[in-house]
Image (tube, rainbow, N blue to C red; front, side, top):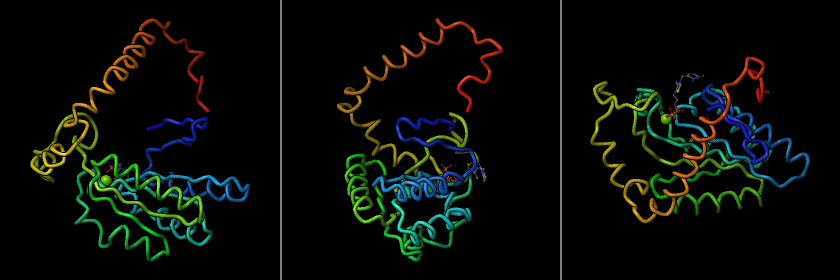
Length: 211
Ligand SMILES: Cc1ncc(C[n+]2csc(CCOP(=O)(O)OP(=O)(O)O)c2C)c(N)n1
Ligand SMILES: [Mg+2]
């Protein structure tokens, strides 16, 4: 949640829902002024579209032709509240009302399609400087926080989640899994070894890498 890697173009994330959307818009404005021809991607959930800053950000980006891809991962949930009890609007139609183009992908498990569509959208933004809202429908497998399941809470059923799992390439596509598992395992093992072999941090290390 708190990762940042400016050297790879990752500006950072925040636990405050929707707060980084305006950061992407600000970065896009700065980059446009410097004539860098870059595209900025703000990634957020369906719940974040209910925050005022989301609306201000769409309006500002459209008004100033800023190169931003607003990428909404719509899992139909904000904590335990389902989207049908929270939103009177459609995310894409609402974006159109601010003058933004929009794309919707219902098949959030189709990584090939998402990659193709995202590449097309990014190229279009780079050419036109017109911001776009891309909505991808998806599913949360686990409880809101933690690794357990909470179907007993009654806000959704296990059947709904099973439908998504039955289409998930990371569960179903053995060839894909086999291709990446050895590399992932060895990266994890290296990281664990590094941690176990490292000396315990001293008090004076407390603020190292904290900016
Ligand atoms: C400004 C703010 N309000 C409330 C919260 C508590 N909160 C944490 S996650 C969350 C739900 C966000 O829903 P969504 O944007 O759809 O993201 P998802 O959890 O589905 O990934 C809420 C309300 C918060 N972190 N920040
Ligand atoms: Mg959500």
